Structures are given as C-alpha cells and as structure tokens.
Length: 255
Image 1 (cartoon, rainbow, N blue to C red):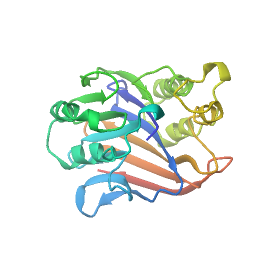
Image 2 (cartoon, one colour):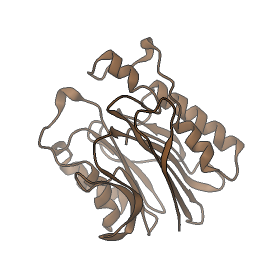
Image 3 (cartoon, helix red, strand yellow):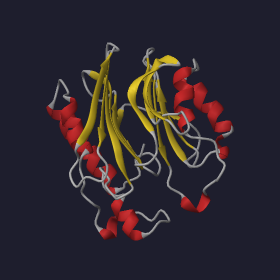
C-alpha cells in the first residue's frame, strides 16, 4: 500500500472512512479481495509471494493497513515481510495498542513501514521510522511513503478532496472515493520530495494513481465502517500501465 486517506470519527454516519491505493510491481502475484480459505474471518487481498496483505478487516470489525517507508539507502535485504504485520493483527486477538507495543519491540528487524491498526473502539498508528505507537484522535489523515500526514502534494491534495466529499455527502458512495484515488496529477518539480531515488522516478511516484511500464497502482480500496459496526469493503484492480485507469475486476463485500 502506498497511499491511505482516512477520516476517523469525522463523519456523522461513519466511524471510519478509508480510501487507499496499493502500488506494486505488476509481476508480483496477487489474489484479489476475498475471505481467506485458511483464515475465514479475514477479508483482504493477498500477496501470493509472501502470503501477507496490505489492507484488510476481520469479522470482529478490526482493520489493519500498511505502507512502506521509502528509504532506499537503508534497505535490509533479508528483512521479514511487512505484510505479515497486517495479517498477524487480523488473525490474532490482541487489542491494537497492545499489538503495536509488541511490534515496536522488534521493529528494527523490518524495512521502513507505517502501520495502522484499529478495532471497534480505537485506532492506532506506528512507524518504525517515527517514534512510539500512538492512539489517533478524531480527524482526517493521510499516509504515503513517509510519516503520517507528511505534507507531500498527493497527501495534501487527497485529504482536501476527501474533506470535500465528507462535507457534501451524508450517505457516502464508494464511487466518489474511487474518483479521488484515480488522480494522475504529478507534483511540480519544486514540490517533489527527496527520498533518495532519481528525480524522474520521484515525479512518477508523486501521483495519487501511478502508471509506469513495470510498476504502478494495482488496486484501489474503499472501506466504510458506520457507527453501528456495519462494514462495506470495495476493491477495484486495474489493468497495468494504462494511460487512463481501466478496471480489471471489481469486488464488494458487506457484513
């Protein structure tokens, strides 16, 4: 996952509104959104290379999502898969704060990450590049490949668009959130971050929706959890390297 926009306790009807894009190499094998045969309480896509996931929920109303922290100068070649940080929370029974405290004790083993975990009562954030776990207060947030709410252009633009939708809509239509996730606007050169990669690649990755010959936005997800605990989860997977987003598969689950 490379972009997560979310509103927590910020809308009169929904406890959590989350819109996210997963960016990945097109060649990496992936299973689409569904209940896992070996863990039927988990609803998520699946990375078939390492068997973890980037975003998911479970039948108890818990949610977890992760983004990579872009830091090519400090890559650990044999680090464990970060996708298991998401799936282990969804499979387990630990409260989110307790779970993150345990993860923090061994977080240096992993390459950089931002991890979001929550249940019916709380939502927590932790990065192994940014201090101890913390409980999030009601508000509107964005995470890409740096710390929570780092003011990258696509974070600022995405949060502004999400705020407008939340102000205008009482009954949120996933389509409005998918529209936000399809923005291919590149950041101006003078607003590009410096994360240690080439400037042309920095520019390509500055869009909300990324396209390139070998890497880009593989799927977009919208999760709505209302104040009565009803969960709606939509996923669209995209055909690779399209000049305009073209859906390959659309999946919808409610419980």
